[in-house]
Length: 498
Image 1 (cartoon, rainbow, N blue to C red):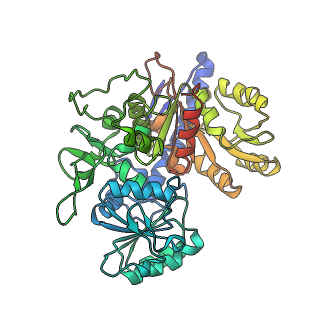
Image 2 (cartoon, one colour; image 1 turned 90 degrees about the vertical axis):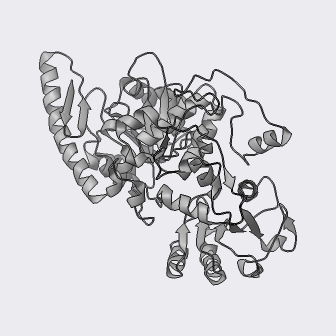
Image 3 (cartoon, helix red, strand yellow; image 1 turned 120 degrees about the vertical axis):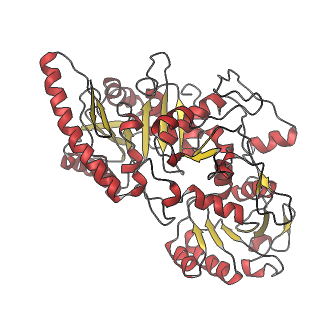
């Protein structure tokens, strides 16, 4: 039975006339309460509404996940304005992330000036290296300072960026410094923390779409993968003209301006660049060709993005992953062969023999078996608690040893009970563990758990997301961009899951 309460839709399973009536009545009461809470959340947090364009949000907003939030237009504006980047911590070793990022940005048309005291006076990727930002000749106008340094070193680098006249300070993935942010703000500079310009450029140009990251662009134009700085004198534009360059045009829309129905059909997909076909085909292939040896090397070294092997990525799967991430308001998603494989993938990076998972006792029967029996073979322990009783949840988390995660279903199958995600997130935060929410029954149409604080969202796509009963599948989605590479790596290693 489908119960429609404003914008809230719940699916209730009925077993027998009498029990069904009681279940439906109870679920209706819970849905009314949940609907009121959702509306209150939307009033207090503008980013919770799917109709809110990202452009209306402030770069300083922090979402429930605790990570800095930056609208795509803010990031895109920086990438289009910047011409020359000083990369602090650039390495001459090709296997270092800073070297990857430098080479990628150079290929996209940016000039990258390396800053590294240990390599000062030598060249890295054809550019002279300097000991500090202030040592770079004044003849070179620095637009952005990209920082590969520990957080405690960022304030000093930011001071140098202010003195040097840069307009942006960008702290790499995993680097957050409130002191550096204050210095940049006081100096009139834009600040980006815990992001990688290489990843953001590739995501907004559609390159990372093939790996499940959300580009947040809906377009009827053929997708041209990639893009680089224009060869024109001012270098202020990007080419080729991709849909992400046209967020305000009639040909492309930011996903925040599209309704759920539009996103469920078009998110992640674009007409085929060669044939113009509107629908995404099934790419039934194991491998892909390379342009040349250098292209193959750059792909395997992660210096550029593309398909290598279908265990790693597949164009058809990538559309599903980006669509799921977009519908769920996440940064990216990884899809698996089933819901159970998605659950294993969610826990595998966190758990080791002897570790404990605290989980709701109101789970899908297969999940109860997997957590309570199958995972014991890995040496993992699971404590089942009533997540409606937050005191019991807190007690279980605090008393158990080596607790690594808290797990619940947003809308329990088959009971229909609704989890207090924000309450559970508070307990998870107090104990320094991630909150994982199974959103299979609710789907993103009813609930987007990342908005309420979930660190990771798990799905069995076999059920309501697919809805046709002829395709098995699972998925994981997160707003925390730092989690996604681990899931992608594990999924590529564990071929049985993908």
